[in-house]
Length: 328
Ligand SMILES: [Zn+2]
Ligand SMILES: [Zn+2]
Ligand SMILES: [Zn+2]
Image (tube, rainbow, N blue to C red; front, side, top):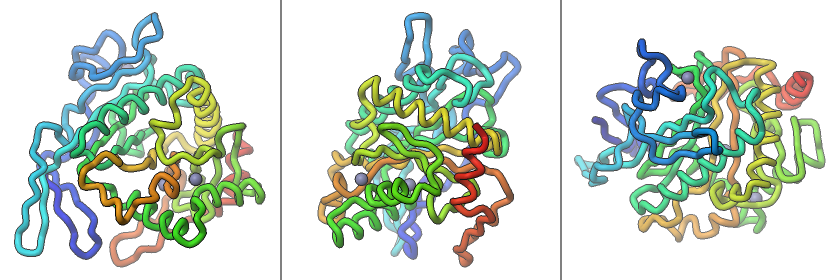
């Protein structure tokens, strides 16, 4: 059981865990809990995608959730401090039946089903008005803390917006207020004009190393056409396949550098939330632009601790893009 505490100096909600969380159900002696035939080792599926021969992706609740749907969200004060129950949802998405693969070596068709699963789970969870944000992320490789070597992601639906997303929303709105243009659309236009930081592009998506990358070989993947919401954008098989093509290509490049990386989706918060502050974020649909961020663990990055907020990255985005392109 955990709770959330608000740091009044940063307005960041901190999740306080009593049981600690590393990764889903641990490996046990019956084999991999994510392999076909071992479904009884995981909770029942909430959603399954089938290709006619069996499941291709499965979503189920995490056995050690960091957020729980059955809790009351009741906010409590303690003097000037705020705390909240960790109400929300935490699901695991097993993304392919075969064991030990990565996005680099399954088919684009298989990857398109994963995106279909993401869109369906987000749409379903966003019907819950207590859920403010849904975060989907993948830890690939031992160094990222992944305990099971079977392709999967975590979905965390929380009653608050993660600090990093809120920061992006604020600066995107700031840019929009000044220029009436989406910050990310402007970034994409400039990257296409410049070309030095582009790793890959197709008709719909662009993959580039962000100008001020935190992680060496960091890559962002974004739609060229403006859209704030992944689940409203990646709906048709054509869009899913197009995104799958870029994702697979980028992951192949990254795996040429390191097998350890995080993939995180940055998506618009739940606009249905009753408490959604429309006065602050009323242009969210125009100013926020969904994207994936891929954070490789390639070198020892000097991680900032509080009080030392500077990240030190030894590889510039321009050199990173060149290095990544050499991997194919
Ligand atoms: Zn497995
Ligand atoms: Zn945009
Ligand atoms: Zn982002």
